[in-house]
Length: 222
Image (tube, rainbow, N blue to C red):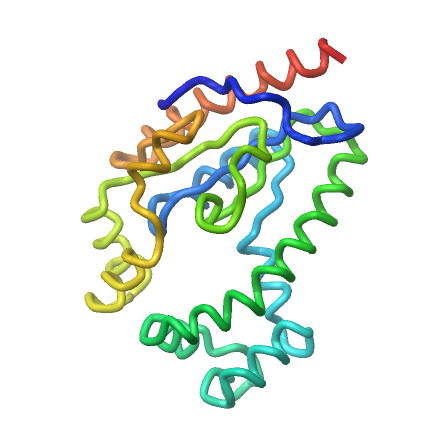
């Protein structure tokens, strides 16, 4: 673990919920930890789920992507051909910036709506799953930041073995995000995912207990 959660309360106006962010570089295991937190009772706002929903055929985001990148990124069934789009953004910083300009504002707006809806129900713990937290958002906007991390070579092999991505593309994907080192220093909790699933579960559980404790303190103080 890194530093204990000691941030000033986030700007959760009118909400008693404890709002944490979970992040991690590609293939670190963030989604696995998010699923555990959901099972244990956290209310989850998942940026990846938002992206998938916003990129469904017929949506404004889908239409903007199709207009900018052309038919080569559209599959025969009319859905987004993610492998082709991924290849484009890995090959061209200009294309990557164009995609980010289309997707990020829409995801941010949708996430804010979901967050407002969640806060209205005053759940004890809200966890926002944000893959690019340090790259595109302000970590100070959360009550705590959880980083899931694993050695780069392990993440490299996971990309190839578990996702079927070839070596060159796997290396390129790893290079797109900030190194984990600076993120570790700015995170309140670091969950190492370099062992078995049982070990990961135990480490995630320890962090979950701390989140629940912080949420209880928040409730008592109000």
